[in-house]
Image (tube, rainbow, N blue to C red; front, side, top):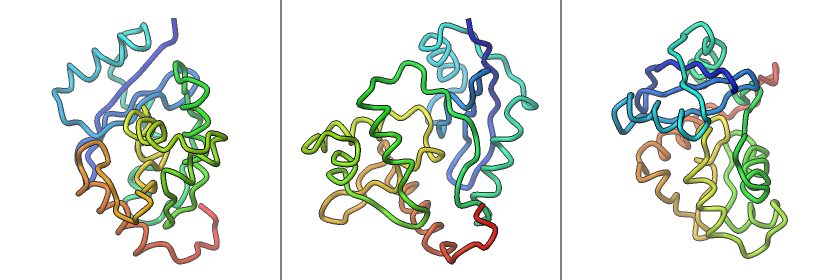
Length: 175
């Protein structure tokens, strides 16, 4: 059984539930339901009971703050994608390669993931990614250029895209 720790962190788009395991960041979601329900669901999926531990999530939380302040372009955390299928993992890896401040269509991600025509499946992978924001599903848009839903919260997606557009000038540090 893998050890899991969690904390809740305030962000400009809502409170983020951050869950880490011994392998890395396992879950990051913006809470739309009671915390206890979210933690219980993650525990069932991961076959462990996450314990509240702010120290264990401190590195991720610091990077979230840097991102929202416009200072971080890329997250530098190990990811724990246990339980994701090969297709979903491939789609998430393709999404993670979308540069800061840019977007790609669901169709482009399907091609990059090796499954041309799997646009809807890419949409499902975006909607179900256990690691929102760090895997930048907000950068995936519809082929017609409209932004889409982002888990039923297009306002959050618009905020993230606007933030990246405002702060996308080259950063000499590469962070």
